[in-house]
Length: 142
Image (cartoon, rainbow, N blue to C red; front, side, top):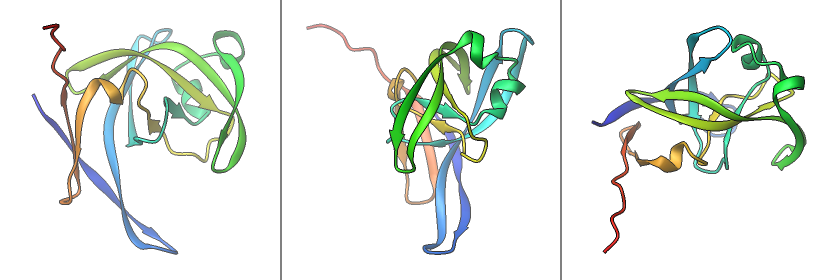
């Protein structure tokens, strides 16, 4: 099964029109017992999935009690990250258990990262402004 999602067309004061590859992802709230829909930028440069702080509240995650805190470096400088080692996520019919990080700020977009998530799919970023995902084939030993 192949999943396709549209790029999000946005205006940039410097670049004019830009297109961001977006994917509809659902995160499981263990405490609330519900799936929360989040549109994420598919970020092949992100080591792991990163979310703004307010989504922890939506998912009923206590950042101070359930997460490990560390600092990370990015283009914008140093940031405090609240790292949750395991959360259930769903992309189409596929489910994964992945780690995620929450930044202290709310102004960042949700980023789908590689570790245990994006790297588990074959992905195609097309010039017709769609992103496609499909399950990687299992490697067989010869």
